[in-house]
Image 1 (spheres, rainbow, N blue to C red):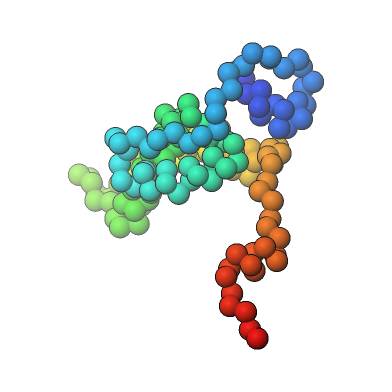
Image 2: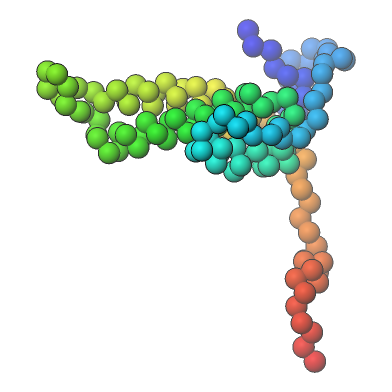
Length: 153
């Protein structure tokens, strides 16, 4: 059975009302550095999502490998889907038309991606139980003043 992290139990209101661990490690909510070994497309996903997750406190300094796996799964899924789009669901095989192997690859990466996404609150179901602090919206007057609009006399 997978144990739910304490932070997630607190955010969801500890529905089981079981005692919470007191000495669980609490890594800093700082995005780790993107690994150099990630393929270009996976790095693009890292760059796109890491800062968003960091702001929400859902990506910490020790989550690098797990988040790299998420980004890699997403990039590989996209690659498989491109192949399906280009060659179709059925391709020529030794004995005529056969299912494109990219269909199975896409299914496997989609399944893995769904599991990784849930760990980072990236799907509606896992996000529905989270109660994270939101950034306060700026005061409209402050925004106007920051914009540096010239005064009209």
